[in-house]
Image (cartoon, rainbow, N blue to C red; front, side, top):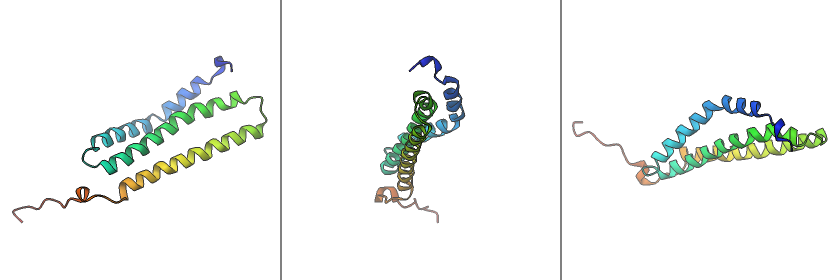
Length: 123
């Protein structure tokens, strides 16, 4: 493959357009790491889900931008099949990440995580 024809401006533009999502995911990762000691169940699932979502985006951008160059001599149907498979894998991984987030939010909690609120002595 001739690396001089890589669509680097296109890849950079797609990363730049995704920057708000990356910053949001990074914030979520930092918050999950801070919550690891107090709420390990929620933090672990959230951390894993955010890492999956960020990893998918970081990998899929260069793959989808360079795939047409790699397969430029392949039939259009072959290119379409590759994009279909990539799309299915991407969506399945994203679904797993969302399931992890839903489990983190609504899954079973230990008694420690369901500690009753402190009562006021003046009430």
